[in-house]
Picture 1 (spheres, rainbow, N blue to C red):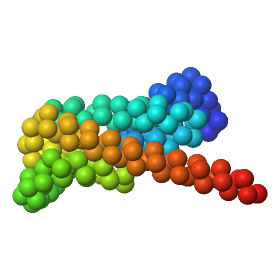
Picture 2 (picture 1 turned 90 degrees about the vertical axis):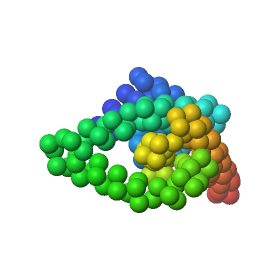
Picture 3 (picture 1 turned 120 degrees about the vertical axis):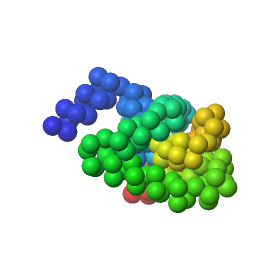
Length: 170
């Protein structure tokens, strides 16, 4: 089964689109896309560009539509949706003064931290909840993604060099 999935994605879809689409997935984002590109043997610069492009694609959509989606969720009959929307609104209101104080650079650094749940999806959600201007939010997320991609590419290069060096010793 695993071999069939691997064959489909690598041979049918191609390694480039695998990296691009992996980088679009929330939580995984380019933090998973860049190691995937290295594992698939793509050049570092191509992996870098595909991961940033894939991770950046959802940002404008989140910024444009998340407020409407949360508003719909608040008025929805499904209690789970109500709870999620209310929780996000309470969290945003509680932290709004701190976030607004460092809005542009704070979001940039938040997105730049290469850990799960600190990527462009969450950064865009925060920007939308505090009412950050669209282009400032896009630029902040983009700069954060460039930093995160640089960190992840560097880590992958160091790991690859370490593995190569250790392989040389044996």
